[in-house]
Length: 601
Image 1: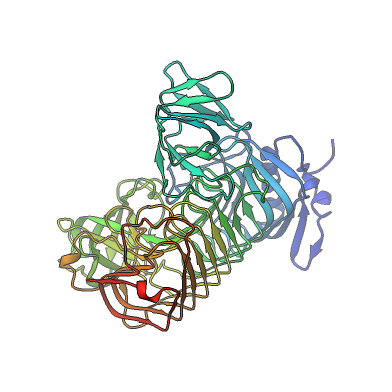
Image 2 (image 1 turned 135 degrees about the vertical axis):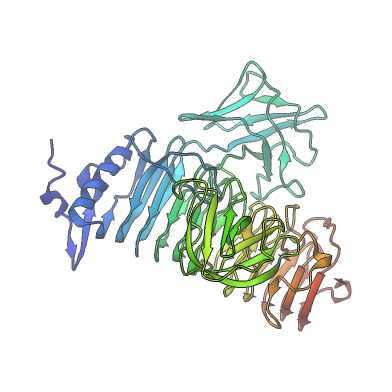
């Protein structure tokens, strides 16, 4: 047997200064049909011992590497905005490394079953470069519509799918160690790869299906004349066990030319990270000839409770089932007041809990849920610990002690939330392509500087840009204070309706009692949110919707109207504002200026 674990082999690695280069082929990790999960786990253990997990470059040969869950590293990770199912089988498990680089050289990492492909946690200055992530059999089942009648639909699953109908008529899709029954359908046009106009999410529980024994199936659950024969269907459950790449508590991670072609959760989920850089990252199909029509089960990239600066540029985000980027923190609902300086806060969303919320020294502010107004000033965390468990993993409640007394208005009797201002990032989202996806293009909920520039938003189905904030349902913070949206091109957003999609650019905090609100949620005075020098090509009326904003500018933009689709949105106004002040609309070029309309409350 080759002595692949000797120091001689490791130092066949070429040292360049303090950086050690390790060729993974020296550990028997090569492209091919075999499972590399166990080999990679053993190799990383050996390399860690020899290098102290520092200053290492791991080099892969080009080709396809197969990963299976049985021999993969098993980890318990509580991942924001995902199903908290544990443990997770991790393909490439990177924990506690410093100045590590993964050089993929175009490697194709192919996963089987249910896995978390890559986890980079507790790291410092690490780079992932030049590889693709995919799954051999996606958990979202794709099918082609064969016939649509008044009684139902005949559909043909694609050749790579595995499916059957059980004795009760339940359609079951399956893969390596998993099975599910789709509950919902997204319909795509086979020519444009866009979501079929005005279809959005189609409820279609496949629990009464007939196997026609010729490779096709019949369901009476879908009777929709808008879905024509030949349409491609993404038939999905709502399971979201793991992203393609998980970043947690990392400092300055960098991803370059990495592509995620499918993940059952999000493409990339980063939580509690300080300064993340994406350059040439993609959640995308495998080119124009790819037979698939959907990439990820949710957002392409998602940043929860991060700080520093998020820099995302030169990316391609297409055919995912949610936003290209979502940046937010998490409100803890105040459920207990133990004394004048100590509160109990609870994670409220079923997919977001079990991970660290803050640290001593962090500044916190409080928001009243019904009006989304700030109350009680700011305070500083003196101590924080899990309240309903012995440790943070899996905890839903946090005991937070502050350095100063908490305002008496902050009580569990009045619905209110805590927002950690220390873990809020600035964002640059530049020179990306977002196209043919469900729901929205981008979503930002951070008080620090956000710049959205030189992007192409091409048929995002819902709003192209959403500024949100919600302490009632999603519990995702917070207010946007400083936003520049400039030099972007928007092509036909709003071909379907989804949550918060009131216009091409929708500023839509969730405020149950807007009538009682005195303060403003977004902005901080004139020029806080600037939409300038953009190009809009649209078939419908609504351009900007804004709620509870102090300081909104829309200037030097060009707007052209087309007839690509019939107009249908219930909002028939170009600009619709609810509780907006310090608004400026000037020097814009509309091809139909007489049709520009306003609804200002």
